[in-house]
Amino acid sequence: PKVKEITTKPFDGQKPGTSGLRKRVKVFQQEHYTENFVQAIFDAIEPNGATIVIGGDGRYFSPETVQTILKIASANGVAKFIVGKDSILSTPAASNIIRKYKAYGGILLTASHNPGGPDNDFGIKYNVSNGGPAPEKVTNAIYERTKTIRKYKIIEAPPVDLSEVGDFTYGPSRVSIIDSVADYQVLLESIFDFPLIKSFLDAHRSDYRVLFDGLNGVTGPYAKAIFVSALGLPESSIQNCVPLPDFGGGHPDPNLTYAHTLVDAVEKNGIEFGAASDGDGDRNMIYGKGAFVNPSDSLAIIANWAHVIPYFQRQGGVKGLARSMPTSKAVDLVAQKKGIEYFEVPTGWKFFGNLMDAGRLSICGEESFGTGSDHIREKDGLWAVVAWLNIIAAANAKSPKKLVGINDILQAHYEEYGRSFFSRYDYEEVPSEGANALVAHIATALKTGSLTNTVHKSKTTSTQFTISGLYDFEYTDPIDKSVSSNQGQVITFSDGSRVVFRLSGTGSQGATVRMYVERYVAADAGPAELGRDAADGLKGLIEVALEITKLKQFLGREEPTVIT
Ligand code: VG1
Ligand code: CO
Image (cartoon, rainbow, N blue to C red; front, side):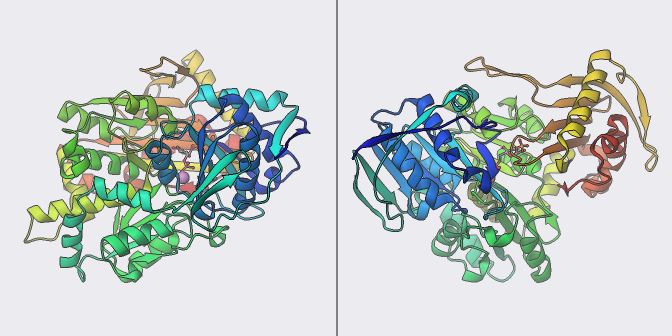
């Protein structure tokens, strides 16, 4: 077919954020808006003869966008497309497909945990050949192209039927529509000890029940294949597992606020092991009755128990560990004790990729409910859930008399390593001026040293905190030496506590400010102190952090939108 060249004009603000370009659907629906961004991707990556994977969380506006990408990519020389059936591939599944079939890259249509539907969010993200999110070098090149674009190339072709698995010719290219789940299921079964997990779950049908909530996001069909087909659990062990274009009107974000369907069902029915994933399947929350696993702790615990997971056994152990900067330092303690190399990188999964490719990183995570390993180059929600089941099954194999649950694993970890109390306050969609003023205020304190060595007393707990330092987090990638600046403002205290402030890079409207607080309590503090409620353990520190930064005044908000 003929390649047409369509004249266009640049749009402002097509800068990919922490994880791709995320905007309201209505923004993407403007004439040429989506086409411009897609053309900018291909201008930046030179895809002649390449194989490109296309998938996503199936949210509203995905099927239309797949057709747009096919037409533009084909006109730009892409030779082959691998597309998830019905435009569905979870983010981890897409990462696996890119790697397994040695594709040149992939385009993921998702805005992750942001709500979907005509009035909500859409997103386009480009992943490179290692299966991971494009590094800043690539996203910056895409952004530069969006600023000068004058035309895009497109072929004329009838829409592809995305609902049938199969291979066919498409203009000058080939299209392969694949089953969304099969390759991913093979992958997970090769990583974990499925026979051990299955025999544990079979033996504890009535006293160790599992509930997975897909929050109407993309993980539904994957969860069904893994929990029901492979592990033999009843259908009642999964809920909200049919992907819906608007996620049923919900907010597909696995945290205590937004995953209330899981929390309610777990509490009501006394479910021992509950879990949820986000819209695109890369996040996870582990939540059993009366037991919440903080994601920072989850990372440390999976790292500590990696020896029970066949994938790491085959590799002769864990090569390295890493966390994003705001994530608590719990995993550092595991690395130190085991003598493993560990890293602190900026927020966003793309920063783990180079370390993994260099063979220096096996397990990593973020406080934002993201955990994963070098089996792919994205965080992986179901991987983390099955990792926990593998750990629980292994712990119980060693303790045949007493059933070991989530809280037992947590408590044992705290008693060995101490506990990093951690919480995050999100102030969503605040005015940008207020957010910028807050950042500027902290930057001034950083520059002048006005806060350093000052003492602050909490009014409610009367604990004293002395500020030991302030800095702006900057990261130099150990592999390619690229530098990422302004990755968050950190305030440290003399007792080892710290508070971090960052602006979100995934919001689609206004600004979102995140405040992360961490306070470490040593293992010898005793079970009562270690087992405290996190909100309680952090109360004084949070009060002091809000006061010294004047956050409420700058943002005009009394309370955060979400506390995790
Ligand atoms: C947030 C999280 C970050 C995560 C990113 C993408 O970014 O804080 O840890 O990697 O979302 O996750 P930000 O810039 O808004 O803080 V996902 O599941 O939305 O792809
Ligand atoms: Co996500």
